[in-house]
Length: 300
Image (cartoon, rainbow, N blue to C red; front, side, top):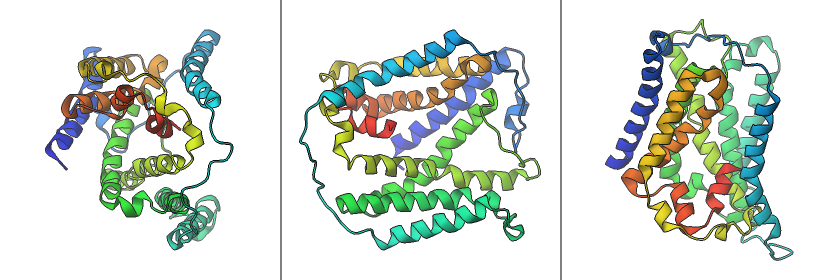
């Protein structure tokens, strides 16, 4: 990994780990429980349902999506979009389907002989999905990341494990989810059994985004969604980093109210660090060029 890439990842991890802990320590709470392996779920009393909060979140979602959907629906295009390439479903795709089918049966049927394997079925299910999606990409474009970008594709697996571990760590502050039947595992076994599934997240997301990009009508018009804004795109990464830091601290101190921020702070932090060290990120590239297609495919 290049030096700047390693530095970005290091700063990301230090910030994600340190800021919530500092916030918790400043409030007088114990920080040792946040490092236990396997994690011990701490039940939190949820806030009561609130109609104003519900409608506020709904409004944010609608306002965020409406400009994109309006642009796509109003942009004229050819009645029929021909594929650049129409190939046959490759052999490795059939192997992926077999892997999904066999693993699905093991995962969702209660065969006595399979009981010890069911906890391990997450990874092969997602590996099968990744292989099948890459096969679908081949049928539409003639190439796929798994074959044409092998080095990048393989690198995504360890990066994904590290990235998702950061979400799992932040979840200890908000308890959005938990895993049953893990307390019987030792620390080493737990780390191994969860790191393998975590490693499939980014390859699956990336492969799906590439597959969606073979359907240009899904993002029609977004290549000129906004007028290019290079001044904004090359502007102040410290603003993004400050907002990300504020979100991390707020999430740790008021988890029952601000738990959704756990999905916003890490990507914002990573984008700010990339902009600071590399001069660009996915978000800033979209702002600089006005082309939001790649960002839209990843969002989908």
